[in-house]
Each structure stands twice: as C-alpha cells, then as structure tokens.
Length: 317
Image (cartoon, rainbow, N blue to C red; front, side):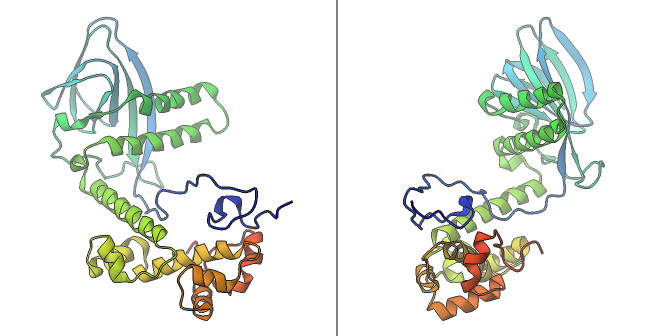
C-alpha cells in the first residue's frame, strides 16, 4: 500500500508524486488576495413576467437598482426620456434616480431583479454608484445569456419556496454571484470610478499572482516582475503596498515559502531538496527566509502540515 500524503488533500503539491494519488486538475481562488469592499448587494426581490396584453407604465423614478433580463423580446421602454429596445438574451440595468417608462406587448417575457447596494455593516444605502453618471441609456443594455443568468435567478426564487434554515443566506450568496456576473458583462467604460478602480485592482492582482505561480521555482527580481507586468518599479511598489500592504519582493518570497511549507509536509522531501527546487542559494539561506516568514524552522513543517497548522506568522493580521 502506498503512503498517503500528510498535507491537506486540496493543498497537495502537484509536483510531489505518490503512487495511486494523481491530481488531474487543480482549481484555486482566482485571486489569492481580495480587497475590502465598501458595499454589499442586498436582495429586494425577483419577479418573472409574462405579458398577455399591452401594458403601459407611466414615467416613474427608481429608488433601487432594477435589472430586466429579457427572455422573449423585444422589451421596449423609455429610460431618462430615451427610447430603448432590449432583445432576448440581453438585459437593461436601471439605476436609482433613473426615470423609467415602459410599454409591454403580448408574447414578451422577462425576469426582474431588484436589489440595493448597502454599507457592509448596516442597512443604510452605500454612496457608491455602479455606473458612471455619463453612462447613456443604451450603454445600460448588456449581453445576458439565459444559460448564465436564468438558473441563478430561478435558484433565488426557489429558495423562497424551500424556506429552509439557511435559505436567506443562500439567496445572498446567489445574488453575490449574479451581481459580479453582471459587472463582468457590463462595458468597463460605463462603470463608476470606484468600480473601475476595483476592476483595475483585481486585474493587477490576478496578473501578479499568475506571474508568481509561473515563476515559483525561479529567482525573480523586482525589476523582472515589473517588466513582466509592463509597469515601472516605483508603480509596482506603490500598488503592492496599497493593495497588499507589502513590498513586491516580500509578496514573492511569502508565496514561495508557503509553497515550500506544503512541499516539506510530504514524506521523504528534504529541506535541501526544497531549497534547490525553489531556486534558493542554499539550504541555509532558505532556512533563514523560511523562519523569518513562517515563524518556525523548515524542519518543523512536516509536523505542522500533518496537524493542519500551516500559515505564516502574519496570517489574519
């Protein structure tokens, strides 16, 4: 019988082989670090509408966000006095303060999502708009394929029928997923400055950690990181400090050492082998860096790994 890995199975390093234990695909968080967001979407409701005769709604001003996902079109309305037509598999986002006038015709159907943006720790309205004030009514129409959104909307509605202990929390999670899907579908140029910055920051972090992952076994200088990311050294340092609170060299070193801790948790993997594999000068230099980041020497990594005690000394700070 082959020896099973000591480490948490999800963190079992791909490059360490164990007979009979093959990781064929590995999925992790898209971005290792997430920034604090000064808002949270909050569900008001979801309606499914089928139109059997012509219906008109006089101009009215919206208090909450409303997204109309068109299933059978076209959907006709006037948004801020501009005529808008929305075809099937497209959606229209109506923002607080928008004036909306609707004319519906038989055969048309759509799902309507109502939600608010609230402050994280209270039920008060967040002062961050999703879209720029300059976004035109036509720019508020976006591609919304039914296979991407219908199941999420249906699942939100189904949780109301289930009335299980955590149905509300499941609805909140589904709304979060749907909300970020919508933002991915919107033209980035129409987003408000805070959301554009969030999008830019997320893209930067994604590229940074992808670069680190590709070069985890190599030596990589700050200049090389900056060159790969097509950014100046000073700009790289400022963005890393602003988003992650650390210098680029420390971020790269910490990622290397966390990976080293996982490698060292495996049977028959020596400190010398890991230090060589991750591109350190020698095992003594590796040991000093390891202890400065993790707070304990690499010789303790195997025991800590088997006890689920990984994590650097700054984790959670």
